[in-house]
Length: 254
Length: 292
Image 1 (cartoon, helix red, strand yellow):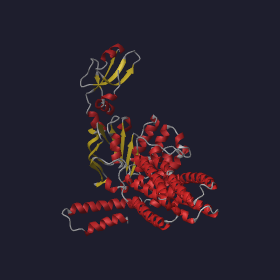
Image 2 (cartoon, one colour):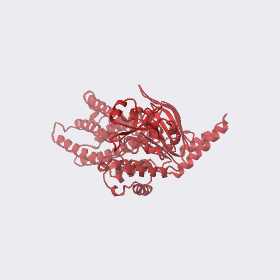
Image 3 (cartoon, chains in turn yellow, brown):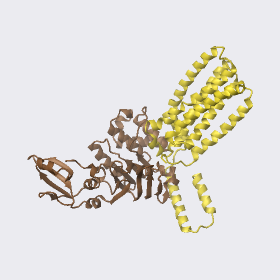
Image 4 (cartoon, chains in turn cyan, red):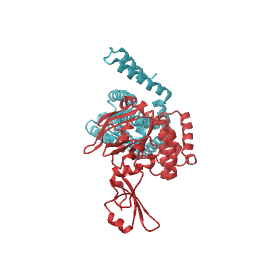
């Protein structure tokens, strides 16, 4: 039985007898009817949708991320050969900025539905538009984590940087992820990309300001604070994600 | 099964697009007729649940569709007026993608796609990229995606634009079969699309429903207002502006045959004609008529 519907039934049955009992009973019978109809129309869950998205758009997203990672590695590798750039502080700063910049690759993924006029068909489907975007975000995020892992292994293997540098990739990644989840919840579809692009721009600016004002942050001295921040961000992101997947959606055009 | 549109209004900043529309849709084919800008698409979007009304409510079996959410989307199919495709998609890719969005399992998707491609004569192009298809074929693919989840309510916004006459007839027949025990709502400004298959028609003008009924009931509204006459082309030039012409045809004898709308016959040789739904449409939307 659908958990949400079951909760509604329990709540309705535990309430005191209402003034309009017959009306209430009629509504409950209708709800039961709808639920019976739904059981005949069993649908795949969100994770089923996510798996099916892998074939339709997942490989495109990961291909794009792989290309960007390859380019990024090439640039970073060239920079690291120059002793001027080869300081841990600068590496940490460039990794942070690179992560935020790379997250902007999500923009064309989010904008696709509007660009190719698929948004109305997608919004009218069972899973609707926001859940679809969450699935694309999760695919993108999975690609980011995988790419980061590969780069980390290569860099660590070549002794280009220590493992603690990972935090300068993880925290910005989680910040951008949290940002997109907030905008997915609050922004209208046509403004989503602009809001996210501005958010990333502000983040980049913030990173530069921090680099100028408090460069010690990039020296690895505040690792525990950054780690704690990362854990909190991860928890918030997971919670935000689950809420977006479960909560009822507003109409596309309000 | 009943879809009730209850005093639904949609107001934009400077325009009232839909003005207190109330309709009760029961199983069968419903035509929503109106000129461009009448409010058809806005109303269709609200019924599809993708646009929120400013006021009023839309109820499916007395439950608000806003509260039903995914359960409502589960049982309806929607073909918007303007829709696109991702450029890399073939016909099968597109239908599989939409089937996943509609929550269909892989096995069901396969079976349903095969059946729909055959019904809509798209089997030969299933592996072709949609961008390379003709306009009519693209429209048929759009119709196919609306039918994937075997909807109980089918909302089609201008579904036949781009279809040739043969495709239109096939489409009408498909809908007629489909509409048994289902609600099918077709919005169009092409009257013949609904004239022969709609159980009921609603005519919308400036956001308001101005006429509602079966095709025969609506045709009676312009009874004794449709006339036919013939005249010399020179005389036609003089009548310009006076006659609301529905149809104009050059005869073999050099004269011109006119079908026109008027409260009274405007020429001596005018004969009253049996009205058609198109006549009512042109009576109510004079800007759509043929100019002499």
